[in-house]
Length: 317
Image (cartoon, rainbow, N blue to C red; front, top):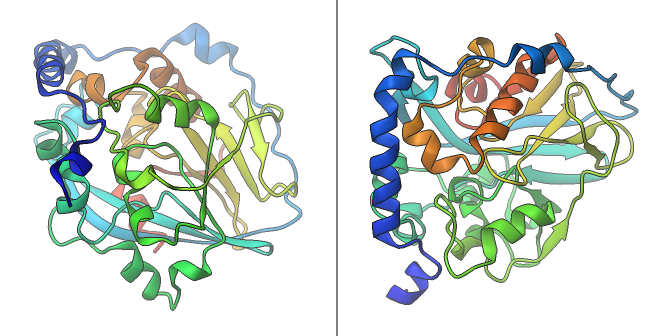
């Protein structure tokens, strides 16, 4: 692989270092005085009824990699010296009409094929521990291969949610809102957190949130028209971030929340990430915090699984 193919569209180092320094400088004060919920916003939230599910899905998580992060930067202001285990991986969904993946996270050699495409020092901050399980092996553990997958959904286009595309046939379509694809792929440089290599040459299919409010979310899209897989608006972490609300065959409702939060602790306490790393990876911090408040206000009975919440992910393997 040539140097150009690794670095194509890679953000330049100096602006990234400047953002890192600004985020670090802002962090100590926010650890002591975290951002507070907007009481007026919370009070004004309306909870729309979920549409009845006329079908259900089978659902399991595919844990591919692990890392850890200090609790106090995952949920700012939490005064703890412990670290939270974090996961990276995909989700396998089986609907009566299709078998698909949400967030094909990692390829087997992600440290060599993808992470070098991130600007310094981002790659050092986010790399999973070795070894990782590539998507091919993760599927094989369930007696499946890439040929058994009908399409792929991405909650957003950060590198750790799409790198597994490098192990899937080119014919498999990636579905994502147009606003997310344009944000990630247009312009001479990729946004921080985006590696364009897994997306080049991939067949894209748009999914637009053209449906009514669902729960605390203003826009939705019923993927199969039967209430079993609802896409909802989680914009903030990235402009087109979506959640995937599933009606599971065991009778539960599960919301795959991508990176709207990194851990359920943020939802419980209504806490955003500390400025370092939040100012690097959240495209719109205000919108991201509103999304956290929407998650907090969800009605009982919806299980939230953030992609990096190891305990939540591992419970659904």
